[in-house]
Length: 141
Image (tube, rainbow, N blue to C red):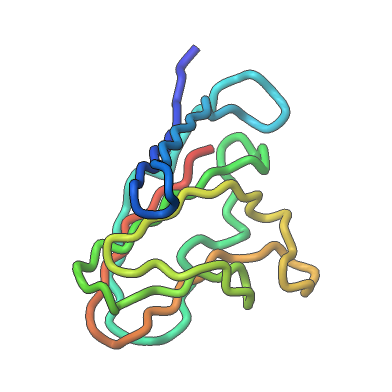
């Protein structure tokens, strides 16, 4: 069985009076099973040069397993600490990625209806400026 693992490490001596060291990892599996995930969209990149709202991942996309247990990785490759990209599920902003920031989150494309319009919810992005910004992204399923 193939194994795909995601992990994060956070280490700081500045956040609290004592040092903080947090490490966590998870073997990625298909929804409700112990079977490892079996596919990905592959790492892709898109460059934006406008402040328009753009669909990054379409909710109608059917991934090979149809498990509703996808994981999404997105990184803002900009080196600017002031240039950000809003990340939205439909019309709901879930965060902002400034230059160098990244995110990794679970979602269920095609089944979640975060904006209550009766449809699955697209993952959308809106750059903060018309300056060129590139996002790397991938869906693991």
